[in-house]
Length: 305
Length: 305
Image (cartoon, rainbow over all chains, first blue to last red; front, side, top):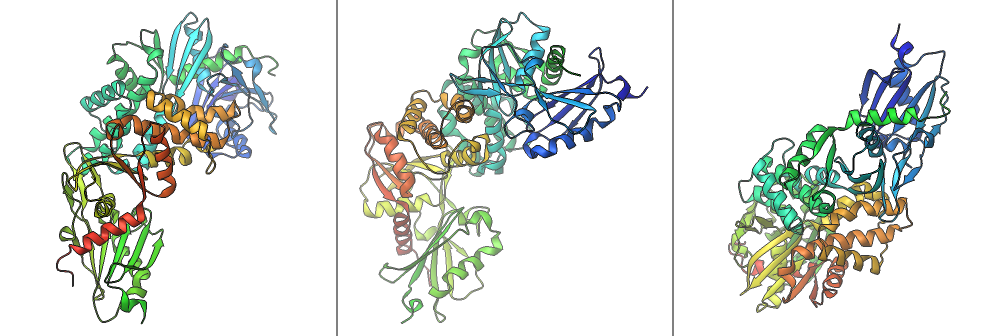
């Protein structure tokens, strides 16, 4: 029996920078996974179908339609087909609200899940709501805050299985711009770390957020007129920016029940930063949460052939 | 009489992005000026002499040596020839400390003025110290703070004709990265303005600096789920980043005697921001100050042929 015979449906997490595909059987067991750096950020609308088929072709049976459930920036205005936003407060999107994508290939039925939006304090997410759905599948009674670090980190208040409100921080993107594209690129290492430098910068930024503005250029100057290493500069830059985020999100974490969901290496940095504030968070890898969220959506999907 | 016969020396402000050249007569009157976007940022060391000669050739007499006095990033490690840093507290560099640049052309004697450095709170400048020198040539008794906005804004304590201490902020570069290279580029206009949006964002950032982190992504979201215009987003981004700088520089401006030197359009924005804090600053165009500073350096130069 070929893998295509066993694949019941395909789960897809299609973000700005990456594409992840999971081939699932009828019991929601994972049969195979694939990933690619062909994120939506580098694609024109007409290219999405070809990219997807290039990856999932081996999973498709010729004689029936395989449902493909997608979440993430693939549903943004600049993506494949624009999907809705569900307004908070709300449960994460179910399969019902998914947007069907017209396709020329009779073997697939592609649906893109909605993102979520907040109107009062304008904010949007596409992808993280599916991580929330996956997390809630395992812990439906969770009442507290989910923190999802990444290029744009999200802090979401969760109660009664709903996303009550959320807020986005550009910390990851700011880090990348400053470390790789600003004058600091000459002084900030790509790898390496210094715990003491991270902790000092973090504490400085949390207690005096304005000091971040005053300190950034010093990361360059301290390597020109002092002997600061590029690894120390990297840890300090990270500490300053995460500290600024923690200063702004204090109501989200102070005395709260907190879980962090993300790529393990970045989760570890945030968990460390929060533990220095006396807060112990649960930590989770984002990928299984996203897959669980896509399973939850698939289970509620009507009209899938 | 050709212009080359009247040119006694040439003043050069060679920054990261731009090159400005002033042909001066023996009385320090300006005979001609030229500018180019061939800043040091885009040049290899071996290219500087050719670029300079391409611009000043018409000013050079064949039968004698014309002194060329340069300031700015041309003297950085990545520049033409690395010039020293003078440590604060100190008067701005005189011509004595300039670095002579080896040249194949017998018609020119090129010198690059030192920058300034601060060791205790690591910081450096290259170019602004010459603006300070120019300013002090007109107001030698000035005691207070000089603020020089730009890609990297500088705040310098001035007393007894010395730069006592200074601090650099990456506000201009942060603005450019966020407005042109981050996700905000889809929502921030290149032109246009909104005074009320600027003032609200400024005030928010000064009183709660951490709110900058919490507000940036909202500039994107408010155009996706609301009706915020790209001009309002531009003014808000500017207000947030300048507000963060003013929150950090309070000791530099609160109750201080302050002068702002820079490109007129950016000076105007900072002067407005400070006037909203009840502070009336003197304002000056940077270019004439730089030229005056180069004149001051030329006057003290020994050994120029």
